[in-house]
Length: 171
Image (cartoon, rainbow, N blue to C red):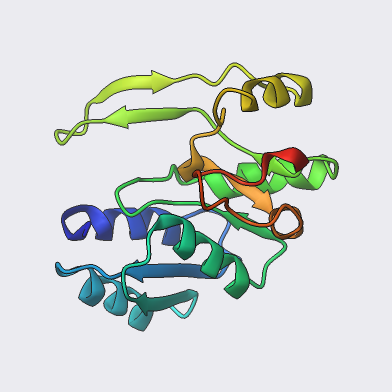
């Protein structure tokens, strides 16, 4: 139910400077105009694949999308978020240069309805040891900024039903 902001979120992905991707979207039982917006996006861009499902929750939707993804890398995005235009290019370049990396997150900006940045989130766990230590308390990643290797996510068992993060033991 993100109809008010969904088109902007979708456009921020379709307008990425790195354009070689499939864009999988799950509609998890929306009751607003979201399904029509999603279908219109799929009709205008062949990279978009929309899956309409009854409401089953975030974790089930994310795990379903992992089964549908064909690419080696998977990027997370929520329907009320906006990605900067070079997000994919920068993340893919990092993965290309760091084959040992399985999951990559970014800092984020909170933006109010007027488009003003109200908060910047700076994640301080930047190396493997710091991330593992942070995972003992909570995920150090803003998941709508995460890109991960699909095989790592699948090997970890996907998203956990009791939380909103990957099986952390492989990070």
